[in-house]
Image (tube, rainbow, N blue to C red; front, side, top):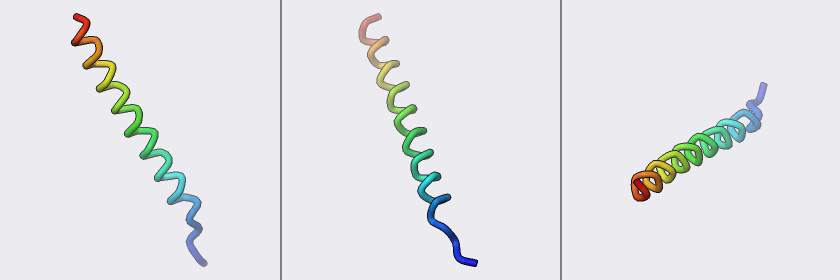
Length: 36
């Protein structure tokens, strides 16, 4: 049985989404802080 790279690709995409989410939250926090 050979491993399919589909699972790896999904993992990479999921990680990218999590990182983008974290960056968005941090950016939102700093924007709110600067307007406060």
